Length: 347
Image (cartoon, rainbow, N blue to C red; front, side):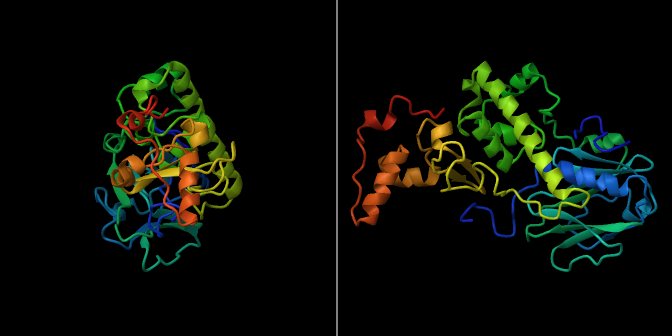
């Protein structure tokens, strides 16, 4: 088997994430990890595994010792997981989660003391698995048989393989915001916070638009945006890495349109990018391109400010200007009718 050969796989204040995290590796990043690992390891023996952290190894059947000497037959992507298949239908399943990363080093390289999780030794080099987070979310599973491997399949749709009708059916299968649907691994495969921002900007859709409100044409725009954005970033990453290995995987890229660009100019219209912070995540968007000029209310701040929450960019800038001049901006027309507005639901 070769890269992507599994039957269900395909080939700060800027953000709210802690400094140790530069974002979850998503489909483009994982795809290039898979391509380069396949080029470096397929047909070669896994000489041994060195487990540095007891937290990372979640299953031990087969054990690391049993896999020593097994030849690598495939490297594939399963959602955001990396699956290394070795002889005897046994699999090494790596989930990087938020802060996990892979490094290709000289053979026998020592596992880093503070962030090192495991090392996989091959004849021509060593794959180092690290996690720069104290939360220990990254995982390593050793699995025997395809039935066991199938348990890691979350069921997300591969947007590259889906027909327009299949994609539309999946979008409408559950009523969520578009942002939530795109990042739900049981609905769509390999899309996370960063690339969902970029996809929604490309499709000119609000991240908090409800999937049930999308027209057929909007769903097709969304499908094309998924394919175009993920293809673009996979190609860019591939070109950057070349014959090397992806050592600088990050969800914050200077060429991105809106993700991680809060307060910076949208490359399409020049409007300042805005964001909504929620839980441990955020949504970045351009009001002009995506929400008809309306500001989406941050849940915690809008609760605090109530009717004083600015509804448009113009109102936001007026508030800032008056605050800078030592004046407090009066609230906009805050009658119940005005607060509800004719088109309160963002599009």
